[in-house]
Length: 176
Image (cartoon, rainbow, N blue to C red; front, side, top):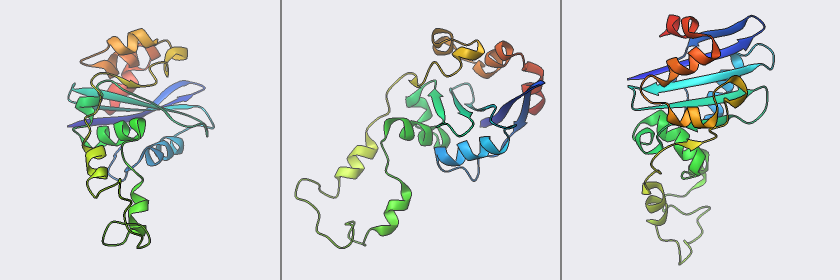
């Protein structure tokens, strides 16, 4: 079971809202969802957790590219939202929109496949295992009081520990 919430920084502290990820298929979708809850260009953190198995943080600051951290890439890659983030960080999957331009034989625009790329080359790349351990930008919370070393050491109820450091435990727990 997933828990997902958005923490938006405001002048008065942090505001939390639980969020449904049903319509989120890409990191861009998640970043757009975070920006919708933003007050101006303030920081928004998208927090995702799956049963203490892994957690992810996506930080969105205004229109800047989102910064992502996943606590355990191998565990996260076995779930749909975690796999989306791991694939984005590792570049393992191509954009689904490109599939629409493929012919039924799997080649683009009806061109024959190059000799060095058989039909199984994409499947082999997609099947490559995700790296074990943390993946992404471990410094994404450093300016908020959670350094790289501390973030990498978190396990169990990591999101509550992060909320404690940010000073918004009650706000996060209210949406849990």
